[in-house]
Amino acid sequence: MQDVWRQQLGWDESVPQSIHTAWIEFVQQLAIINQISFSRKILIDGHQDIQLHGFCDASNAGYGACIYVRSNGENDEDTVVRLLCAKSRVAPLKTATIPRLELCGALLLARLYVEVSGALGVTPNKVVFWCDSTIVLHWIKTAPHLLNAFVASRIAEIQNLTDSNQWRHVRSGDNPADAILRDQLPHAFTQNRTWSVGPEWLIRKENEWPNEFVRIVELPELKKNACLITTFNDSEIFNRCSAYSKLLRVVAYCRRFRPANTYSGALSPKKVDEVKVRVLQSAQATRYSDDIKRLRDRNCAVKSRIANLDPFFDDDGLIRVGGRLQKSSLSFARKHPVLLPSRHSLTDRIIREIHETHHHSSIQTTLYILRQRFWLVDGRGQVRRVIRKYVRCFCFDADTVKYKMGNLPSARVREAAPFTNTGIDSCGPFFIKEKKYRNRTRIKVYVCVFVCMSIKAVHLEIVSDLTSKGFIAALRRFAARRGLPEHIYSDNGTNFVGANNQRKEMYALFNSEKHKELISRFASKHRITWHFIPLVAPHFGGLWESTVKLFKHHFKRVVGDSLFTFEELNTFAIEVEGILNSRPITSLSSDPNDLQALSPAHYLIGKPLTTLPEGELLHVPANRLSTWQHITKVRQDF
Image (cartoon, rainbow, N blue to C red):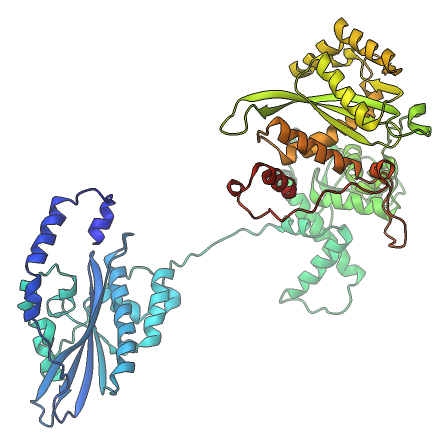
């Protein structure tokens, strides 16, 4: 059956000829099974000694185990061996080595023994497990922690279920479990007497049993012992401490772990100075190793990076700057400062500590204080680099750009009825589908945005085409529902210059003479004053531009690439309109006793806009919903 599975055949495909032939031969001999019988009496009459003998074996086809009962009567010559039980399993599809399969067979035998011993009801005088794999026997006598994970877990279970001293070696020819793995047909199986009574030597005395054990030179599946050698870098500790003074204290305490240390108690200034010398030596050795070798050989080359500083070693072994101030009355540290390595973490920590200790002094002051004890090749540049990375100083030194805001237009700050002063803009194109079912033809539509200049109320209209008539129709629908505005503000057509092709379509419409004529006629007929913002100044229309951004915010996150019909998209736009008109336009208070924050809907209907109660559709599959339920689910998912 496993061979058929490996062929990966379909239900209507024929099996290979070799498998078909083997199956037909097996079916023809299947009736011979009726001739095979096993005695149900497994113990001899008057038994004095009962032993259990288990055998296991494995091959590429599978692995198995069998258990025999050996019982002795009052006379030692009266011995009976009977097959008690057997179990087998096919090899896994993933290829495994023979020793691993043999190990699986041994584990199967141990588990089978535990089941049999609990159900037999008789305590055996002796238990012996036989295996023809010397590798498995060595594994059983090895500690699990020395083996790889696959072998270790199984060996640990075997050692837990059985005693390692109960396992013995048997030759493959004398192993009855080998019959489990052979492709024996019923006719050949009836001739196998070893299977029913075990190997012939099992009925003899114990001193005639196999007692050989072969030692192997190299045991597989052992964990490899790796000896790792690493080089300790003294400079690594520089990165573990954030401050220079803390670094000195940490190193001072670490040096107390040396066997030669006899000092204990609080840190003394002398110990801190000793650590300071050791830390500076380590930092100089990481950057000036070649120069140190030349100085020790008293051969400081002219091409050295520090040759012009006239370096020398002091009594502590530190590199100091020479110079021509030996006869001055300055202190030794000021005449010959310690040379610090450039671009080193220790140098940065020293600069940072001086800067913080002197209350965040300037670059010039910090460099002056630093040079009283240390010398840097590029002192000013390194001090500037460290201080400018200091967040606190950078924040206080930053020059913020302060724009002078202009006055708000009168339409924004004077009392007026909603939509008396209205800003108009268009956005798009958006795409819809032509038909409701089984149609993916995309059609362009646009959204006309009306925003009240006083209360920021929003009105959205879907326009099917970008024409003057479509725009006038949207304006008429707006006036019929919100009232006729007195003043309308909109973009100037030249604001679209330089935009992409989609915006150029709007530019062509708004700049056309026919469109201007229709708008002028509509405005004069309804006594509407139309205002255009200045040329090339789109920031004058920030109110309706932000409203367009809010609509696109909802559209991109909810609709995305889905295609709605015109009616569905119109429903969605009106729902977004309700959401925008219900947003607060005053600050929210954390005090529960304060009044509710105002929204544009309070000026329109006296309370926030709410929709009708609707069911929970978040976890319902989309293919089970109607069109309107799908729109509701899309909004609830958002």
